[in-house]
Image 1 (cartoon, rainbow, N blue to C red):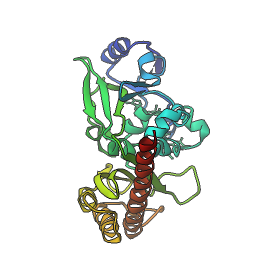
Image 2: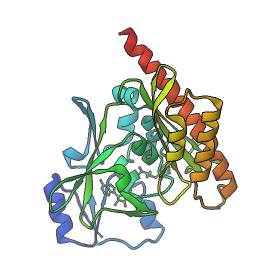
Image 3: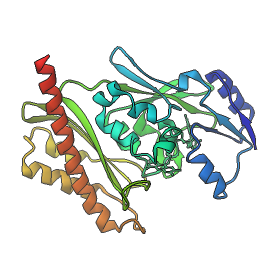
Image 4: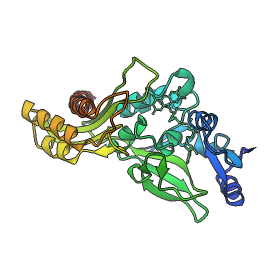
Length: 291
Ligand SMILES: Cc1cc2nc3c(=O)[nH]c(=O)nc-3n(C[C@H](O)[C@H](O)[C@H](O)COP(=O)(O)OP(=O)(O)OC[C@H]3O[C@@H](n4cnc5c(N)ncnc54)[C@H](O)[C@@H]3O)c2cc1C
């Protein structure tokens, strides 16, 4: 197995075109365990971390850009980013340990395509986009268009993700991500729930709710969003959120939890994530009215 470390997007694309049996990587926190567990080795592994454009967290005008190979610890340590996206920051901060977060990237978390990937529900809830590098040019794709099944993405051979783009949240809008694991840390989600909520006074004027680890890919819960928008977060509306989240699950039954358990936990976490995002959206509207 050969190793290559291109320093530009074009060089990486040329390298991938010349060797069809190649695999890109960033932190390799998924890649190395997979190779060690006996998965077929590619002829070439292509390290994306030396490409400047794939590293960094920047805010330009009203859009955050995160290089796809940026260690997730750079997100959790960025106070401005965390203020705009507390839920996505929480999700990034749940990946493995400090050591893992100094390697792990959003690009790897998304493209490994695990149903339990922690950052993906929060990225989808926040309408994140990715810029995809391809021999035919760059294109912008919504994050929910990348994962198509466990371990499978919509990227064609030779393509890779350059960066993520996230528009700053609108006024009185915030997010939250909660997950359930059987241990206190270093485990993968039995259920993950992300919510982004917009409020106007006590009224819910916008809601996006996405579940992870309860279906082959992250699942948006449209019925929960419909139940919430126009409500004042009454007990009935929150009960409808929980019921819709449980109903949207198509989980597996394994040692971490039964199907019935995952369904129930999905409802509980969706409701709690909504409550947390609501509290944050209200706090952000109070802050902006005081400045
Ligand atoms: C001990 C441990 C604990 C973990 N805990 C968690 C956890 O709690 N939550 C969680 O979600 N994950 C967890 N993980 C999994 C892993 O750390 C994350 O998925 C991480 O975000 C992967 O990022 P990476 O840069 O290391 O990916 P890599 O291993 O470099 O790549 C993963 C996959 O994505 C592809 N890829 C990487 N970058 C790109 C790109 N820019 N464009 C296209 N394809 C790309 C690679 O080809 C590969 O198939 C854990 C892993 C370990 C070893």
